[in-house]
Image (tube, rainbow, N blue to C red):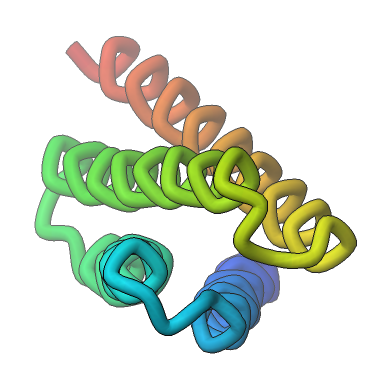
Length: 123
């Protein structure tokens, strides 16, 4: 078993937890509650989907499930940008969470490209 798999899983756990803690800091307004629910959902979804990636039944299924992780990370990134635009959270907290989100997006995008290249070589 690869340590990289568990490192990525651990990063997804930390990322989801950090975003959940950030969401707890959002104001208890209509907008704050809405954004908090959305960002919690989208930031914790990649972890659940990554569990599905590990049980993929084919390379095509593997690529599809990686794509779901990437989609949710991109959505989280968009919600985090909105939080920043609305000045709803301290900048230092946002900066580190947004940086990790961007790094995870890069990891998943690269993994998908690599898996697609390998899939094309098989054909």
